[in-house]
Amino acid sequence: MANGHRPPDLKAIDFRIKDPSQPANRYSTYAKGTSGEKVVPTNQLFGADWGAGAFKYKACDFCDDVFAETADVVLGDAWLPEYVQDSDGTNVVVTRSDDLQRLIINARSEGRLKLDDLSVEKAAQSQDAGLRHRKVSISYRLFLERNKGVWVPAKRTSPEKALKPRYERKKQRLRVKLRGLSHTAFIAATEKNNLNIYLGTMRPLYIKYQKSNSSWVKRMLSFCKRAVKKVLQSLPRSHY
Image (cartoon, rainbow, N blue to C red; front, side, top):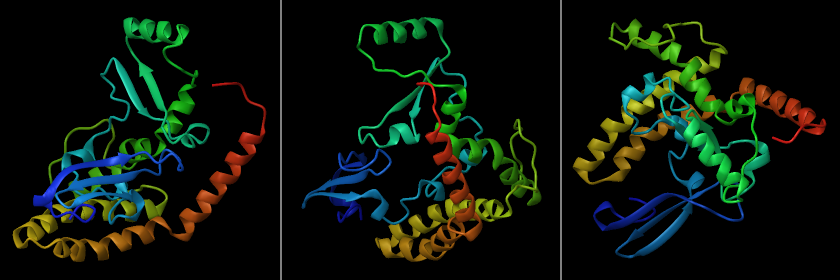
């Protein structure tokens, strides 16, 4: 069921409805069915953590491209403290084409686009989670496959067992399990026309994954990160 609607009755769905009272990263899910419409905060739905990787292709675990490296222009979410409070959302823009660069600069000077200058470091910070998953943790996922004797594509990162911190290895193993289990569990639920089969199969592993995310080590690291960020934000800085 999607927000209370059975799949045959579903007419429309939007996984990213903006809520003016919430930051940009606190969106809602909208569903329309034959019995009406419903909007639910996405973080209240089961499996709403995108990092858990439900229904993800296995090939995605071996993608190491975060900023669409061969594209002329790239837009991404500006997950930065100075922008995330805007419920409408803000984009990070990266250009690799002189022609497109000129178009964007002209639109900015004419007042058709509102843009701030952003350093390379800030742009990378906006995609921190994706960079860590695709550029760092990929080495451990490659190791897991090689260790099973499974073929893996040649990547810019070599298979590596010693991923640090240690809890990150456990999180990666759980993500791999969740990704694979989500497909088989959903097929079983579809065949029986019973969503509870999917939920019952996934929930124990998902709970374990959530607990791994809230380990005391990670909480301590997050605390330190927030403390450092507060200090940095209190210092005079140039406009980005």
